[in-house]
Length: 330
Image (cartoon, rainbow, N blue to C red; front, side, top):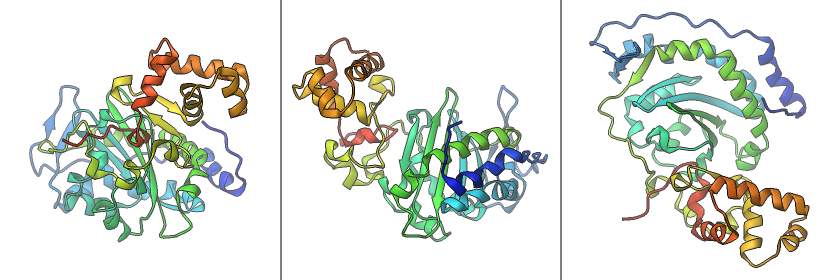
């Protein structure tokens, strides 16, 4: 768990540590249609999106009151919306949310057909995506009708699934990317507590996963039209100076490795002709730090020489700020 010392905001989240996680209730799904059984015994339910019975009985939605209670301290951060999505590689998923009305709207109107986070879950990398990096239509404009405005999605990739933690702000112009960046340590702290305290509830929902067998959006690559073209077209070196960009992702070609902003700045110095000592002076870091960065970068990218690293740097573009791959135009 990451440490954070942010006054009353930190104290607000500390209340999680003293509360025991509510026991997940047990539910029996009505036999409105024959369920699909996987070899591991997990019940996979084909959704009837228009069915009130589904939303009234599936643990992903009947747990909403527990999630509302658990997420109350987020309001001190001006965040009023939270949804946990666990997407498995077999296209099943678990959803836990404090905004059931919005999620019902999302499913009933088949908005998942347009959502970037519904792409192949294993095509993502660890990281975060600010929502204003993505096109507002149709998802985020619809969410705004439910009081959900600017926000961030934090991503954790695992072998069999990928976890998405969606945090949305209230309709408040003061909640921009800089505001959210200042709360990142607390959001990471919240995620750790959520996974620990809500483990039983996650497991219970995992026994009744939502499964959409005919879902066609199993793309490995995110299409360029799904992201904000202004950011995709921005100059790479200007872009990394933004506070809302913290890592540069290099994609599957480099085993989804990433570079930190400091590492990118160092590589820019070195590939621009600076010696290690000059780079040390220009960046205000020690020679030992320079050598450590270079070793880490070489190991991470499996490069042996600075020439190889320079080649990698030459391939970088603004697309690499995203923890997913963007398809090239055909």
